Image (cartoon, rainbow, N blue to C red; front, side, top):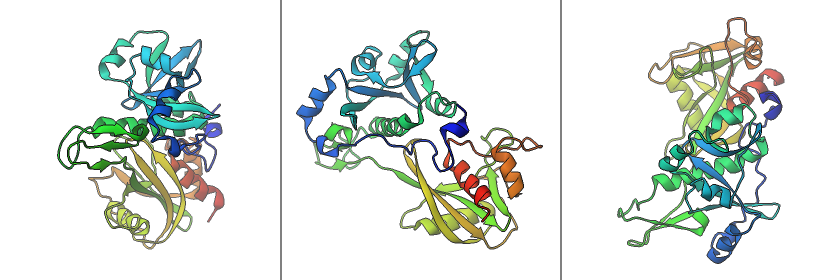
Length: 312
């Protein structure tokens, strides 16, 4: 199955959620503990930007039994992600020492999540739950101490909260909003590239929404700051959870008011206009100059593909 089959237009990675989050169970510690002991319960095990997977012959399996996860070195503290077909699904972390012990093993391996997803090695319907696990595990690893008084905090409510025993402050996971936008001027669209992109790859411009800023203002500001292009007619398209570490990509389109590009070299290596015909070739990796658009895994591909195919 190709990436285009795995992520058809309008369906980037991490958006197909098959779990019932069952938030009403998060405060029932006794029931959550009992569910962890059930043979039907499963877990996704996260190590930094990677995932612990089980090798079954030529195939890999990301959803592990709780015993499998623990025997592989996963941390016993579990995060309740929700229910799938009545079975409990948890998220678990893996320490560096445990990950290093898996090197050379034939039954388990730690593999970079983005690469596996882009290659279609993980069923697309599992990616939303994995994104949830990755974001939550990362949050607990980075926020073990109270931001108010510095005391070590404790995991509560199935991992969806941390409480400070000293000052009684409550801490909750955060999601950072990011605008990502396709700016067009007639039959041309604006794309940029960062230095870390693969050679020849261009994508949509993006940036974090700042405090007390609307989505529309963030789109206009980021485009102006990075490319010198003023825009209007900001329209919402769709969102994509992005667990790097925990963002929500807010896909938008906008209409340019000028075409003189002034690149902010501290943010971008290049930014330029592409015709609709060029963009179509870039999406299919058939551009004669070797230029390429964003991978179907990412919402940027779908913003660009929508503009190419809608012809508006």
